Amino acid sequence: MAYVISDDCVSCGTCEAECPNEAISQGDEHFEINPDACVDCGTCADVCPTEAIHPGE
Image (cartoon, rainbow, N blue to C red; front, side, top):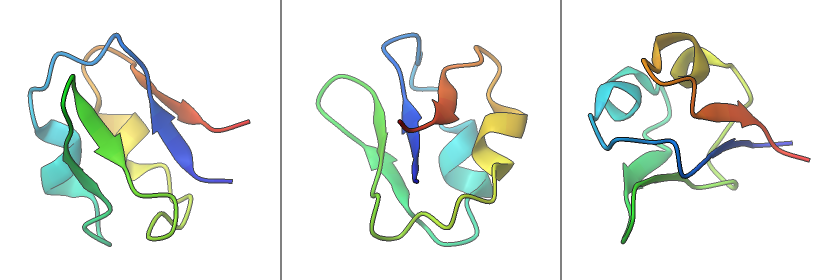
């Protein structure tokens, strides 16, 4: 299950820079994770300063 970014995201870009698969990009409201490219490594969640990234359901 791919990780997801909640509305708590402040669009700082930290997660995008750390993603090894380039699965994260800026969306309309905040950064978003492409579920087809996400490999569930959790690197993005580890670096998120607002804890806005969680495993999807």
